Every structure is written in C-alpha cells, then in structure tokens.
Image (cartoon, rainbow, N blue to C red; front, side, top):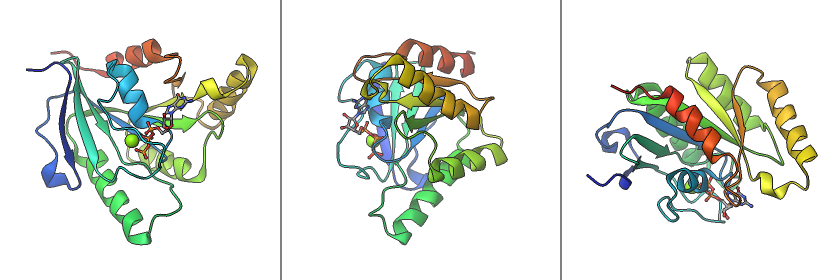
Length: 192
Ligand code: GTP
Ligand code: MG
C-alpha cells in the first residue's frame, strides 16, 4: 500500500471511495488554499491540484496521507460566477458527504487571513454547529500580511466570532502552521 496516494474523485456519493478510517475534510471558499494546505501537510507538491483560477474543483478528491489518515478536498464555495444549479449541486454533494461519511472525524474550515469570516463561511459554520460536526479553523495565506501584529489582529477578529474553536494560522509559502495542524489532526484521530 502506497503511504501517500490519490484515492479517487467523486461528484456523487455513490462514487466515494471505500473508507479507510480517520478522514479529515477541508472546507472553504474557492481559492482560499485548501489544496495547497493538503499538499503542505502531506509534504508532497502536486498531490492535490491547485490553481489560481477559482472554482475549478467541483468534485471531492480523496487522498491517503502517510498511511494514517485520508484527506478529503472538498469543492470550494462562494465563487461569483456559479449558477444557481451549480450552487445547489455543491450544497447537495457537500452536505451528503458531511452528514453521512462514517469515517469523517474532523473538518478543517479555511479562512483567508485578509478576509476572515465571510457570509458563506458563517452559513457553513452555523450548519456544522447545528449538525454537531467537529471543526477547527485554519487561517490561510498569513504570508500575505505585512507584520506579526496584522496576523495577530486577523486571528483575534476570527476568534471573536468563534471563541470555542481551535484556530491555526497557516502559510503554504513558509510552512508555518503545518506542525500545529498535524497536532490538531492527530488529536482527533482514533488509533485502533
Ligand atoms: P479551489 O479548489 O478552487 O476551491 O481552491 P483551493 O482552496 O484549493 O485553493 P488552492 O490551494 O488551489 O490555492 C489557490 C491559490 O492561492 C493558488 O494560486 C495558490 O498558490 C495560492 N495559495 C494557497 N495557499 C497560499 C498561501 O498560504 N500563501 C500564498 N501567498 N498563496 C497561497
Ligand atoms: Mg482546490
């Protein structure tokens, strides 16, 4: 068994690959950095497909990482040029996954450090809380902020909205936050 490998892509629940236990879902707006975060955590550039064009991924991509966990890269939301039908499809696919995927142990909700919580993120947050789904927040692209003070301010603004949720600042450029996120993930993992 390859310790780190692409397991498949699914645009409907029937196509989800067989579970391998301990699955982590990556959620967030289009272009926020979900696929880049997966590559950083897996220490493997190009494992997950990244793109500067938002809204490319419309399916869920599954990756086994280090023979330990499975990462599910969910399609992004909030991209303006999406039709109502496509937005409905996103909702159906993502909600089916989050409600019924037995192996799911944790969701990581990504927020852009420069934007913080936006309306669609808050909707998803409320949905996760209503359905009692565990999640943590990763604040991405902190390398784009000019100073540590700005990073701290951004994280504080996010924490004010979600005081009880762990928040990890992260940059795919500098690698900052990779260790902390792994620690958070491993805490959620049930080791047999
Ligand atoms: P979708 O699949 O469209 O939903 O996007 P995504 O959330 O997977 O974003 P992706 O990882 O493809 O990154 C989008 C763009 O942001 C790419 O051009 C990345 O290189 C860039 N990016 C991602 N993370 C970081 C980061 O931490 N710092 C900086 N400076 N750029 C980043
Ligand atoms: Mg992506």
